[in-house]
Length: 540
Image 1 (cartoon, rainbow, N blue to C red):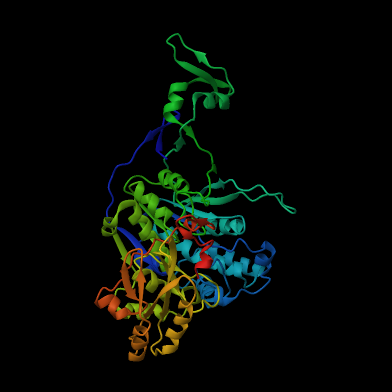
Image 2 (cartoon, rainbow, N blue to C red):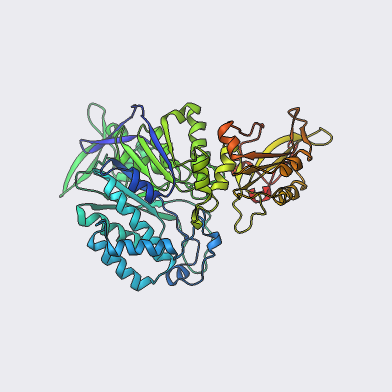
């Protein structure tokens, strides 16, 4: 999509060409990052798409019917609970010891507590208030804020944003309706749900806004919309008479209309990411690049700074990079950080990492121990994710099963020939990660139990602390795995310590496949390729 500036009642299309400087990718809690590392009035645009459990029954959410399983309350799993974090957040807002919150916000949360009680919905709203307050602080006077949500909690979020932006001179500009297509099933109790809402706020009346236009498909489309006959001047120029307001009519030349494009409304008809989308990365809430292109081009200029505090699979930063904007991304899961790095590297090559400042990722044993010892439910598996993805050079897939994972934290895929060497089959390499100070052979026994399954050819045990001599001996006794396709041989069971990861730069040196795109694994037999897995769940 191209950006347009207003010109003589129409919109002129222009392009951006300025190169970027150093961009920043933070791994951690966005509230901590915003408060510690992002200075006042330094960001031109902030877009956020915070998670919410919209698949639950609305009545359950509003009335707090049913109790969430805390064991499943991970950041990647779209769930909210009334826990210590919510209690502390509510106290911080109400007491306002740092003078961060407006009287309007404090009064609002007090009222919402009376209506909603100490519920998962109130926990979500407390979480949002804390972070949007910081976003309002870091925005420049000319800055803009876009909050992406669905109708489940949009009315509450609108009140929250009003209380933060409007009392300090900000303004609510639009509710953008993102309309997308889908399967038109006949529902028994409601209409089909086919839109998300995006609330657009500015910090002041001096905000950046570039008139936005898209090309007309043809002159016929333009004329049909105007519902007027095409007239021709003596010089051959075609035009239609258009209503200019106040009973006045003016000429609209077709050649100018084609050049300037058509201004878009606040209803955006754009396709969602589906199984056939070229952009698809397998991330459950991935948004299309076309959506972020409109937002970024409308509210920033080339070289401006864009921030996404819930950057997920990195659509915002990928689009900002493409449109020559500087960017900051923040996410609490290493799975997202890994996916963003993979996405950027695939588009721009390995050198792109030289233009990214990566913060919060373990850089030594001490920081790895700190990550492993985090107590919060929402980050309880982050050490395992970081270990698997970092050691595999982002080529492995994380086990996202809820509850017990059977001791398997990730898998990688490698191609090999079958026993008759006639067809190529997909084989699995399984990962198990432990951060215990005291390690026992029982951990390897659990991994070995998985390795007897069909299609599993190797096991990799990653440990925070040094393994025992008995464990090393047990691994050697497993022998080797011989890959017929690549004519390579590897220890069947490998033990990797985090110390070796840092001190020796030890990484997975096996020609495994990239398993980021879940769409690659189809449920069918493929002649010459052997069995392809039906779903990612089958891999575990």
